Length: 103
Image (cartoon, rainbow, N blue to C red; front, side):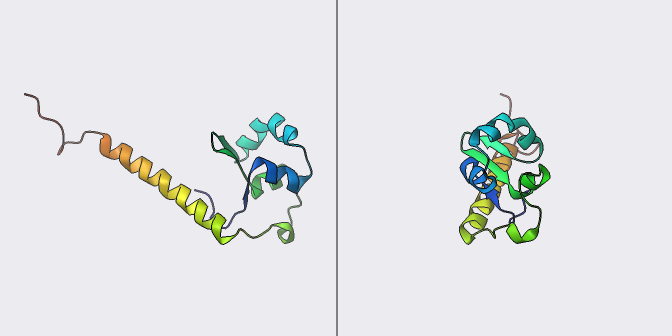
């Protein structure tokens, strides 16, 4: 589960923050994903800690911008959506109580 207080960047935001090209990020996609970034149809999600682990930003806390209230809310919504999806999947599985009867 992602820390709700952690700053997460899109590909463009991370490129702007680091001064690297978006191409460098694409080229290093496997490294970024291994360090905690995600890439999906919705875009790139690159945690600040991932950039720190790769040495692409200064690890000092002073340069970490605080997440906005909207970013915190969006992160929480994504967590809840994932939880709902998992619960729907769990409910779709037949259990002893609700197994279909054979006729």
